Image (tube, rainbow, N blue to C red; front, side, top):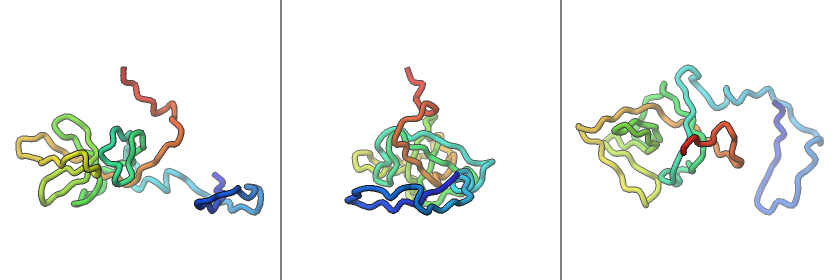
Length: 137
């Protein structure tokens, strides 16, 4: 993959020609985005509850099961049979959204709860990929 560094800032009036002196790097998106390939999966974010940390509806989540979740991490969890993406508060045993319109949820002893992995990266798709179109009816 060829990388053409383009310095883009607010008030852009145009781009220099991509053919004008570019840097070619040996780059693998897999290597750049995934630290533990055998324990990593990609999820699709749905909803608005995590917008405060930059995760929007339709974003791709790179989730690493090898990482140990710490308080304040964005995680994917199975909470009573539903997959959720939230911030984990270990001390208060809560799942916290980053959108004020969504209240925190306490994890009780009777809840079926398991952390599936830590969100280590998120990717914003500016055009919808046919690979990620929801199969919902």
